[in-house]
Length: 82
Image 1 (cartoon, helix red, strand yellow):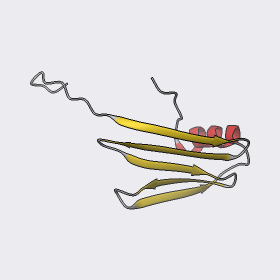
Image 2 (cartoon, rainbow, N blue to C red; image 1 turned 180 degrees about the vertical axis):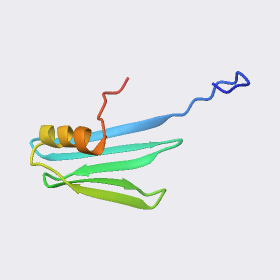
Image 3 (cartoon, rainbow, N blue to C red; image 1 turned 60 degrees about the horizontal axis):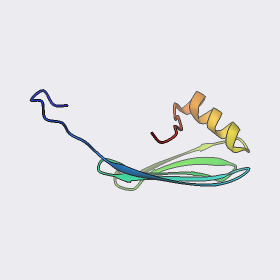
């Protein structure tokens, strides 16, 4: 909500592919975001092609361990859609 009272809304779509025990891809594309997360059982990579940057971190061997590591060490939190 702007101070003028005008309501602004932004939209995005999230897609998620999971292959247990150690594969994940998550894409978010929308008005203000274009990001992809990749996890291959060894590393977690964030790609932001619009901003032309990426980051990779070593990751543990299972999805659950990777999500715990991403939350505690990288401040990345996976949340269910609302």
